Length: 484
Ligand code: HEM
Image 1 (tube, rainbow, N blue to C red):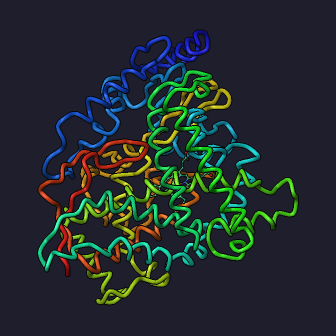
Image 2 (image 1 turned 180 degrees about the vertical axis):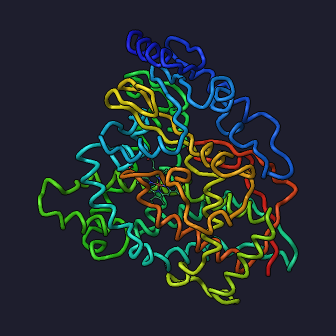
Image 3 (image 1 turned 90 degrees about the vertical axis):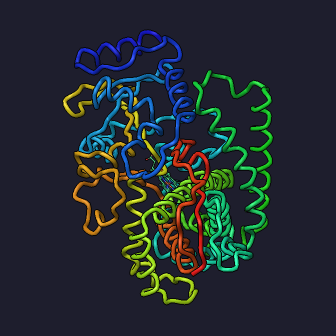
């Protein structure tokens, strides 16, 4: 608590790395909390949201300290040092990790309730074993098999929209609608026909998510999770109930789902194909993965869609181009998109990429050095956390030009030059396993919304991007829709 942080700080200081002064126990956690609370209360951004003020409201500590100490600086979360790494070349080196010098940062033990020992929290041999079983379930051909299920979820979302509008414009908070939609999709693709039961489980998982996000904002005191506080008791109760229901579902549907195309079935059958018994996942492992998919796949995709619709509502020119492409590729009636249509929707793909650039749901990534390493001219001590602010790299004017903050999907007409200047799904071996699902889901939802409606920003919408595990609009996403 004293010697190691002091020596790390001294070694980095000597190399010219500066940063805010820290509290001996909490580091800069208090400063970060205060700055974020102030940013959330600050005046929202009005008018055109193509201007540059998004990194500040979302990561106020990062913006303030970059201004004071430069691009590379050191701050502290409790006794953990966090060094900012911002150059794409260095981010690539860390994420590709060819020499085994970096590892995932261990999560606060309370977050185990959210994903247990699932992919997101695993490391080493167990991660390799799970990834080997799970990756094939998300390959693009499998994901295309889920298109009808995603279309069903989208139709369900669209059902009541504008029923009483009689051709007039009506307002919807898209943020809520899209969160329900992505929950429905995950339940369907994870559990197939049993998705109603899956939904009940995931509603509890939602509550757990809220409790964990509260925990993540504070420094974890060892042993705290065993104290019977009100929140901890709720966390235990939810965890027990979720595990019980998932176990029942797996046992009851094991045989039937083994041959089906849903995630649960694919995991069960892929698991059985592992020749060596020690390579197989246990029921508890499968339970943890089901929890992980919900945690990792629901809010991220809902927020991508929310920002995409807001940006289209604001940028009528791109909305028009998207409408034209959709009518050309999928037809002018409400013909649902099929798997073949998706690869022809180039403009929509560019719009999705540009949305992920400006509003990446995962705002920063972190890794930790496992040994002393040399990176970008610095000797970095073992045990230093590396903080890579995706959103700042995505909006860096030196990389993207003076208009980096402007929504312009045509940036993605051609392949990006540098791998690590755009990495909304991460990079390297830990790259998002659900990327194909997220992109297919986003395309289908956008097609089906735009086939039916034209969009405009509502005067009641207030632009205030906020980080709550993922990047979201603080006051909802009010959009005016008119039936086409
Ligand atoms: C727009 C939507 C999404 C975004 C932006 C996103 C982003 C990310 C990022 C940045 C990572 C890497 C984290 C790191 O390296 O530290 C990641 C990992 C992961 N994502 Fe996603 N994700 C999305 C959707 C999904 C979906 C739909 C699923 C599954 C249903 C999913 C499951 C996972 C899992 C399991 C991991 C951990 C992979 C591993 O460590 O091996 N994600 N995601």
